[in-house]
Length: 394
Image (cartoon, rainbow, N blue to C red):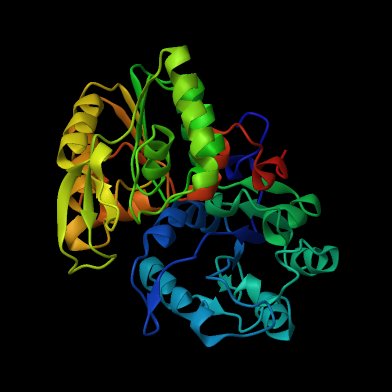
């Protein structure tokens, strides 16, 4: 991050500081049910408040249509939770760049906080519309990006505004980039990478990149069935991408040629149908029934993966090993998560997304060295891609 200024180098006293945060949190019945992302933003928020800034926070929430207010995507519950965490009022603007937001900002004193309404209620946000960028920038004197989870998006609030105001990185963003790039560029070895998730097509760039970086690569989740197909196995009614089976086979060959130990399941948990109460059993990966669905790696595979993890000096994990959301099929992901947690000597990084949900579900988050807030952004970094939200700060 040497080329990017952080908030430690910013003069913010008495200035309006426009901060892009990632408050895309789960909400039920008007209450935030998981405030992890809000908590991760507090060091930056508190630092700026201590320096006498007037703090204007902006975020998206969910996937609104972009045609105006939608009650289920309002950030009002986030403003309420943030106020509780900070122990001070948070003014909630009922629009993003309109009259209410402008009035709220105009009335601010040093140390005040305003949270703007959901950026994505305006379709111009995702389009990085120049006019919308100007309207956002008019609310602030200084811009700070602390939303690593959206840094891979070239949107108005993550890229466009940075060109119009003095721009800095917040602590969360700079820490995420430094930690992930540091591990990937110079990992302690053996370096074990664990990849799950639904589709090979979504992770092909990540897998290719990790074959070049890792010593061991462990494959699970829905994508593993496409890898099994590449070896000539039938996978029943499991999630699969027949068009990607050949490419999956090529990645296995690439790993072999480079001396990378790339492992795919030797046994699988299968069920009659996709459901919590579905009758299920463990079968060899080479003998999956034609009328059953793969729900995750089997106990033999999970134990083999755990053994590799136990010997690692660095671990990067993105993607569950199966349908961990269902109690009946959580065991394989739990075994892998426990193995990562138990390796206290290793640098262990959870690369965002469902892996974070898994370690939280199993109560193991505090045993991990680093948990990324951005699944998509961390995957882009793994591939060596530039992140628009980071590049905009250079």
